[in-house]
Image 1 (cartoon, rainbow, N blue to C red):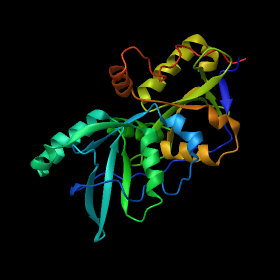
Image 2 (cartoon, rainbow, N blue to C red):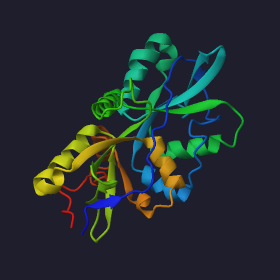
Image 3 (cartoon, rainbow, N blue to C red):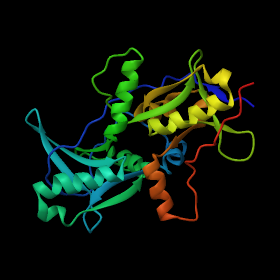
Image 4 (cartoon, one colour):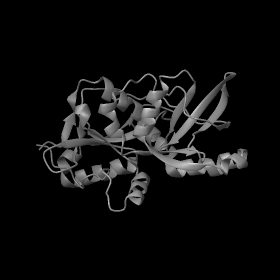
Length: 272
């Protein structure tokens, strides 16, 4: 049983925008920041379904539209946070100071990454200019930036949604894990560096010789989705996105008797 998969596709690094300013409440028309990526729903939605994201809504369920001026041109955005805590902090520390009356009517609402994707895809059909923005966890952005700099590429800040992937150094192959009974193995892409490190450490203990040839690669979520859409490599379909530990705990709080799929195996089978 192989514990690695080679990927011929390039997992690129894309850009991202961040929330600034405040206007009021709005519905969900507009253009998304995934406009350039045309992903087939049946190929992607299932992979995104178990990753929660968090946004702010009013009692009617309408999204908060934030606005700012960009080169004298107004820009409207709806923010979706990878971290529930970040969404709550933005509400408590930012919006309540700028507009306490409005902020008092808002709540943090959970959606899935698949919901976000569908909203963006639907927005492409409309002519409004609202941008739907994913906001990464700043701790993980810092970790991604540090790892990239340590690998010899100088960047001031990672621009995007970082994912951390255990892989082998010498060839373009990625560590795999079993998700269910059977012979199928999958490539874990983690939203937290710490999760990738933990899995890699277990692999090194189980297979020290192979473990010496491993590292963690940083890629961007948008680049992964683009690869899912454009690559002809069947190994791309083996990618599985693992939510952060915070998000896993949130999922478990919603369904105490159900374990989310986002629990990697303790130690992958050794490579043969």
